[in-house]
Amino acid sequence: MLDVTANSGHRAAPVPASDEPLLVAANLGKSYGRLAACRDVSFELYSGEVLAIVGESGSGKSTLLQILSGQLASTTGSVAYRMRDGVTRDLATMGEAERRFLFRTDWGFVHQDPAMGLRMAVSAGANVGERLMAVGHNHYGKIRDTASSWLERVEISPERIDDAPRTYSGGMRQRLQIARNLVTEPRLVFMDEPTGGLDVSVQARLLDMMRTLVSELGLSAIVVTHDLAVARLLSHRVMVMQGGRVIETGLTDQVLDDPREPYTQLLVSSILPA
Image (cartoon, rainbow, N blue to C red):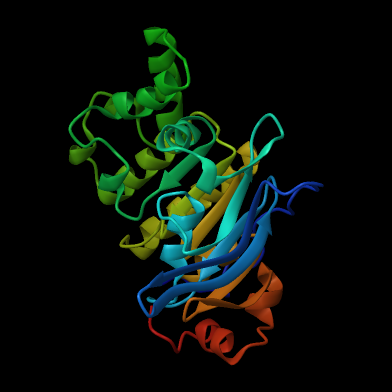
């Protein structure tokens, strides 16, 4: 785990002002019989804002991310998303085709395991180019040029454009997955433990690159992580979960530098297991 107190001068830039939320979660809950994996979660996310959801394993953060991204139906509550035309839609009213369309045009999802977000048997260029084709690009030369440019942007040599991700290292695969997700400049990106399973040196390089891209593109993002250094470096706000509930939320520096709740204090002092 990276040091949560390190690089204090390299944090997320201030979030741009916005009058209307991009995404609104209201009283979300998810139960499996008597087991409540997520309970009464409400918050708003604004354009250009990065929210980190933190907590130990079993706290409900991954379940919440699946609900927010439309991959899992909630038992209670709702998720509303403001579309590009300004109309706010409840995800529960969308059909599967509409949600797939959102992931092609407005959303991205970065998995902890890059193999879940990449086609491992086709080339890196095809992985990135497919996203461009999904939003209407059809000129092969321009698609290849854009894919090559994005490989450079995520610190992969364009000479590897025809190589399949299965030939890449773990860090390169994760950077390729990020390029695949960001090439169409989505409005909202979900990230599930994006640095999980990587060596500390690889994590640091990846985080630095992600912070730059999020700032340059003005992305909104929801990041699930157990690593508070990831939250420190990427997010504007932090939401702390325990037992399926949100127990503390606030500006990142406020929560991590002066936590109010005993559980958050334990997380910050790294006493609790990841």
